[in-house]
Image 1 (spheres, one colour):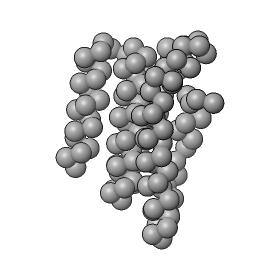
Image 2 (cartoon, one colour; image 1 turned 135 degrees about the vertical axis):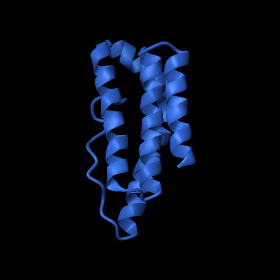
Image 3 (cartoon, helix red, strand yellow; image 1 turned 45 degrees about the vertical axis):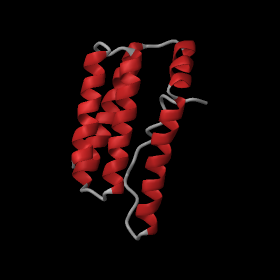
Length: 119
């Protein structure tokens, strides 16, 4: 629970410190939200908490889409945060595999990386 609160506070602080809704702030928010979602999977928290974390991710993706960045701007942004993005993605995938291997069911996770990802 402490990590969940800490990630939330970090996300809020990042948004406040860098301005409201710029591409860098949104990418940082996106990565923080991915890590929060991974944590809910790792801790095997309730489906409601997992759904809440997914909803925050989807909201951030919608904000990014509203910026209407050019392909070149998207590529630069993804290159800048590529390492952090890959770590968060791998963490989610590992948590999902662990859940399935332990006899749990795979969460109904939409393609979080389909709309805004490096090719």
